[in-house]
Each structure stands twice: as structure tokens, then as C-alpha cells.
Image 1 (cartoon, rainbow, N blue to C red):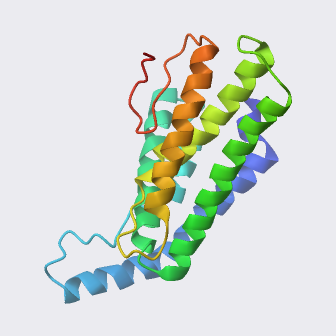
Image 2 (cartoon, rainbow, N blue to C red):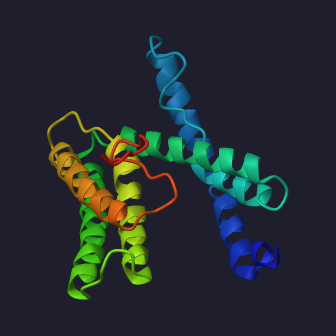
Length: 194
């Protein structure tokens, strides 16, 4: 409980709350655009601020874990919607593609570290490394993969396919570890080994 009241958390909450000041002019602009283009109702450009949702979720953590979980899930969806809205812009799309590349490379480096260290399935270190790679791969495959770039200005679709194959390899390693927890495939569905 004390960790939620730490100076670092208070500073993060303050920064998140301050972001509301930047939201108002953008909301006005979006609402003006929607009045101009009346067919856009409700306006898809006006989105709830995911930063405010994260701030609310942090507040809820000490009061109601279930509500905090739901608020974080909502923040995740809204942040992805905001990222999706930026994918029509070349520069923004290239930034998202670069982040994809960084996360993908990091996940693969964990797998290679496991091979270099010559870990055997069933060992604690092997299970830890597989879990580490699985967690990073889940971020990639269950969040970033939800973004769709329709203009053909990035390689997100090809990267999506490739990262799915790598996630499948991670699942095979996880299966060797005989984990007792449910794990998910590349599309977020429960994985049942053959």
C-alpha cells in the first residue's frame, strides 16, 4: 500500500492529470470537425483520454482491484484506438513500426539467451526465460498486432505474421516447461498443446 503513495507515483499521477489541459483544445477541434462533417456522429475523433483512465486505475488499485483491472483494460483499448487513428500518418506509422521491431527483437533476444545458456526444459531458469519471452511476445501479439495499417506504408502486416510464428515457437518451449497456468496463442485464444 505504501508503494502507491510513493513520491514517484504521486509525480506520475500529477503528470497524467496535467495532460487534461492539452485535451480541451483538441476536443474542441475534433468537435468542430464533426460539426463540419455531420455524417460523423458520434465523432470518432473524440476519444476518452487513456492517460486519465490510467490515473483513475492507479487510484482504484488500493480500493477495488476489479475496478482497477477494468479501468486498465479500458485505458488499453483507448490508447490502441488513439494509436490506430495515427496510422494514416507516415511518420507516426513508422514510429509504431519501429516500436514493433524493438519489442519483437527484445523477445527474440530472450529466446536466444536461453539457447546460449543451454537451459534444459523443467529447470527453473528455463521456465523463467520462457515466461519472460512469452510475456513480451504477448504484449506484441495481443496489443500491437491489433493495429491495422491500411495504406501500405509500413510492414505491420508482414511483421504480424512473423511474430505469430515466433509466438508459436515460444508456446512449444512453454509446453516443455509443463506450466500449470493457462497460456494464450498469438491471437489471444487459450492454447491447448497437441
